[in-house]
Length: 125
Length: 281
Image (cartoon, rainbow over all chains, first blue to last red; front, side, top):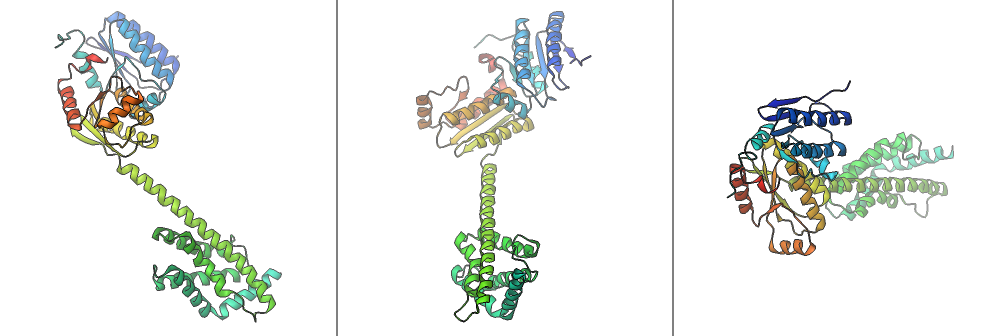
């Protein structure tokens, strides 16, 4: 029985806080759970909190990008928050710039980011 | 057995004219150093060495790496370290030891067996001089690497310009080691200060080539991954020309001519933070 990362719902945003070591199977399960939760709840945004993640590999990096792409397909914006400096450096060195994934420094800023644009996007000046 | 006899004889010779020889040594060395080190200090150093050497020989060994010469090696290490720090040349340092050979050199009326003893001693002194030089070189290396480290520390301050805005004024040439330090410091500052706008000011960077540009891009991308927006400022006209001529693409990274412009841009972004991300998500 592998661990599963809980997907929490706050308003119309889903919060995924990753507190365990990211093994490949956990990541795959998470992707599956998240996709079905987005559909079930009709969520508008997804926040993935990786504050506690200290080690990433290319697989996890790609998974973040894929998850964001899947969520976008289901009309939910993904924001990755709380990336540590070491993790960011690792991803850059691996050549993964996570194009298309939005990032924020803290959970709070990530939620703000989702609250502002998107649905009630103001007319462009 | 023979070696034992030789060293006993040497100790005899060395102790017999203890004061004369040591003083002659001090004088010979102080001549080469031309007063850049006080005679009293030199006198103390060399007398200690002389005593150590006699003691080592008394233990009956010519093996300079052995137990008996531990004291001598420690003294030599100290001596060459202080010489290296004070900026003496390798020759001057080695001469301090080698001068002993001149002082002890046999004269016409030296008996044959003493000449043999002298040759043995001369070998020993050579080995010790080599050891001294080695320590000297090592000390120099240490000094150089310590300075490089200090330079690295000095040249990469991360300053907070405003709430949520940090800047890194880069001065000097960027290489991969420095970029690494800059990147780490900047990213750590983003977390510590909770800043979401970062400005990299390259006014002090003398030249930008593809490698430097690559390093800058990496830093910007890393900052973005953490959720901060990065602005590159302080691009001088020549550098702009070079960048374009080299065909370096900065993509959607915001670049500004001056730090002031960059700060204005950052402030507008962080306070309004509405129209900012529209373009690049």
